[in-house]
Length: 276
Picture 1 (spheres, rainbow, N blue to C red):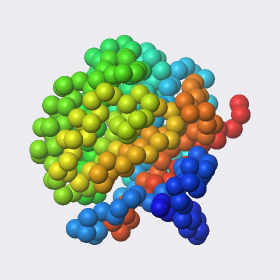
Picture 2: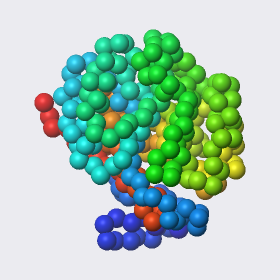
Picture 3: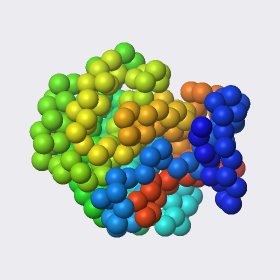
């Protein structure tokens, strides 16, 4: 049985009821299955946002994204993660527009490449976003790892490159296996999710001895949720003027994650830009 907690109402859901629940209800608010380990309960609180698949295309996108940036700036967060496809085909004008728009974000933001971000080659990404393919960082006693799951510009039946797997092995060996860990990628890792890499299990197996709490991905424009051991693996709808969701839903937006008193909760925040 899954418990959805929304406002002051707690609703027990059987599997049958869950299957009938609307995507909006499932996206609204969810408590991560399983609390953090007892040793993590006193860790510092942390709030961060996750957004994916912006597909910035041309100057007309400014009218869509400027209010979005303002909205994100009203959130009580410490960090923003962007899970790939910042641009639609990675032309320098699109990259520059992304940088101009998101330079106004008040908190640090971290990015990882999507396949659309590599249309001009991986070197162009590396030049534009130095050291933003495979990397780790810490914040408020939490560990974060970003992995480049792209196989060039391919969008389906892809295999995550051995260089990414090698990086993950080396990086994880240096991380504290007891501290909570968040992974973010572009390609989805949840079982049976459309566009899942052929070797996604190889990636997840690398985290067996670590306290992986969650993995956030994009590429599939729609909400999915799966579990792998104690970790929850999700994708979200896109947040873009240029593209729509793959699952037929109309909502666009982002997740807010809160780590409070040893619990990680997720809230979906819908973005409704005003008509031009």
